[in-house]
Length: 266
Image (cartoon, one colour):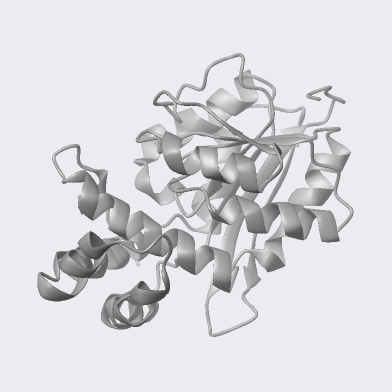
């Protein structure tokens, strides 16, 4: 189906921060415990090894909890990783600091807002997007990939959403139910989360809409290949494909690109 670049409510500045936090808390909790990206992490490890990169700059990190799972997966795969730097348009310094402690310093973070379209030149490392690239319009998506190529940095984009109408509407229907079931297990526990999830169920409504829209504006393999082609770079290796998840009927759609020349991003 045709891509629909509709809006997601938690993208807006006017959305109360507590609603955004409740939503990102759930998304982080789900990603950490379900680990949907596990089948694709091996591809990232191979790319980092071949590009001699041992540092990740994670863009649009949200709460960043999944990075703890990523570190474990990469360690289990004997992938050398020195550091992950968390960044976001709406950074969570308190949460990021906690992750830094829990990771024994392997996780660092940028306290200020970081624009994924124009990353600071001093941020060196493999740029990763987990469940966030669909937020960008085609023009901005192209700019993001162009900027990575211009900076001669690797880039990896992973999405487990899919532009399939059946999957999209099932996500809109069952996603809020899953949120209602799992919310009591999210830590740290807060009464405000219970308030906006159960007594005044604003968060499930936001999640229903945003979940549907996430699927409807996810890029296909063909579109990602077009972005890579438009960079005009002949010295980049691109891998763009789909991997079936180990549960359900969904796929991970991914783009991985890195310079053919050996880089030193230690």
